[in-house]
Image 1 (cartoon, rainbow, N blue to C red):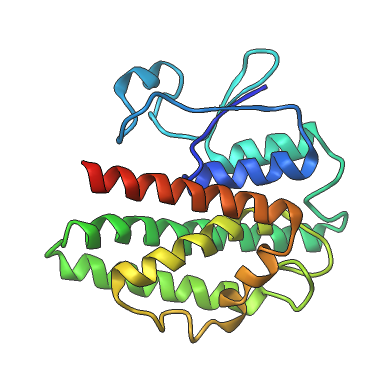
Image 2 (image 1 turned 180 degrees about the horizontal axis):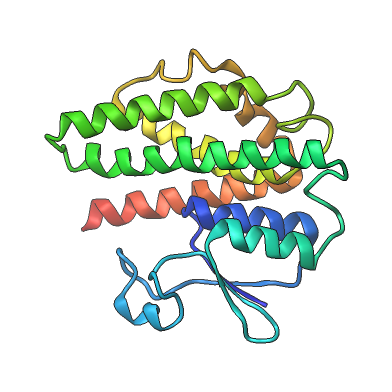
Length: 219
């Protein structure tokens, strides 16, 4: 199997986290250099974005949520979804809330704030969406070593890169107290950096950020 991924990509980081935890035999490769990804990559990814998984049979699997489910089914041990259907629903709700209501608005806000957008209504709407999403995630987080308890789940794979981006986002937004209303979400960093799998993804993203910032300085 081959995974097209970049270290700083949150969506790619979700999949690397799952692959590392399951010790899946996946080769991680980079798409063509450039930002945005060059059009030539559309021959592999119809929407020209990562991650993309190429299976051993040659099937191309796109979209992080689909790739995650594929890996969970193809490599069932160790599991990242609980055995009980109620608990599986809780994990899935946490991942969807994290991706759609926290990560998605933050990634758009990164672009708008970096470009100093004058679209204040859009910026305000995205901040509000993000705050509602963070409140929902905060409500679901437990006190165990992992996001939802004693065992790692797909929720941890989504929350690790999402929590990472907030360190840079708080600086860009000039809101150092942004996570004060969400202490459990804020404290995820301490759990993540102590875990052998989650910390691997965290520090890969940190290295990717360092490279990205260096490229910005020389651009």
